[in-house]
Image 1 (cartoon, one colour):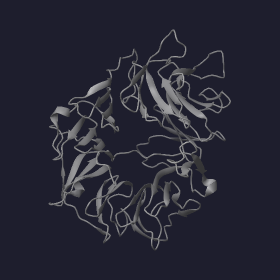
Image 2: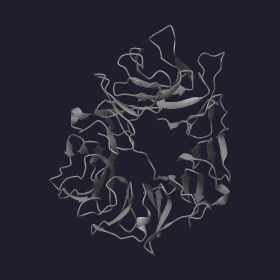
Image 3: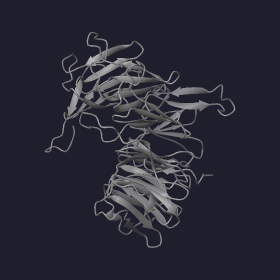
Length: 497
């Protein structure tokens, strides 16, 4: 049974799980002191170690969507389903990001190349696409799947909303649906007659009685709001946008006493006590269940002497449900899962094991639960949860085996537990944690990477490192052979080869 007090988080970025999927063996609740795990990799039959979605169907099968096909797992063996352009009885595309089971027991797979329905009884696939003579979708990239109480499947895409009768497999024409020509970030049924649709050009609602979609007016501004987050509670709907936060009552009217304007909502978290946490471009806010107004969990950020570069303060929730929040000048905050205790970490020049700098650029949790904090000019602080102290990785001009620079933009862990570090002036560095050694990929060193400022780092399923630079485009880097490929904006060329 679904607990109505729990939030329905409908806007979620794709979660990329590297290396393996851990499946619990045995009864966890009965054997909490003897939990055993099995590591499942491509050596066990998984098509790729990069998994975008995980789903367990009503028959007990586990389904894994990857960039190279769909995987069904029975606890021992894998069955892999791949796309075949010459065979309609296959999935539409190999890259699967959405898996959904409808009320009739049929499975739906959303990909970057269309939608597929799967009948587990006869293992027959039915394809739905946004191109070709049998066009049924407004776009082939599926961003969201949702079944309403009338057994209709709503399909959100990169460009518009679609609706299918699950029983008849026929397209349902919705009045004014063409007006929703935008990316669909989420779909949520709030009552028997109303469905909310979150888009990049505003909030829309579908009315069952009139069979039409209308645009909801959240403010008096004529500007289209980008709906970044929707969360449903037992009594209301929380709406995060690029210019304000709103709480709607059951009739979808804005509760003005809760309205927050001139803020860019990055994320909303509703904890187990129904406390609302909002990460914005200005502060971390919260409101307890019975409170009328929001309070600042972290005060307004102290300005630094340098230009403010990041637009959203770093915010993560770790594996133990602690909320970590970095600021630009006021240090680092940790909020316990119960929401009652707040820990504030700041630099103390008299304590070498305190936070190294009060301006935080990034926060990263590795696979072992260790928290890495990249700072605005003072290296990396690594949090020790036992001592509540920090170990420091910092540049030593006299030691080549140290960080090349102390301004840290990004941190990423690869499949071999190496930590890749992006700096502002000294390029890319790989920290081999087990050996405590650094390999620098500086613009003056070999292998050469002619970019000083590394803003983002990401490892794909092949072990290739993708590097986002500050103004010099995107780089795909192979750490095994040093080869790299550059992708830059070309107004005359809309494709990347």
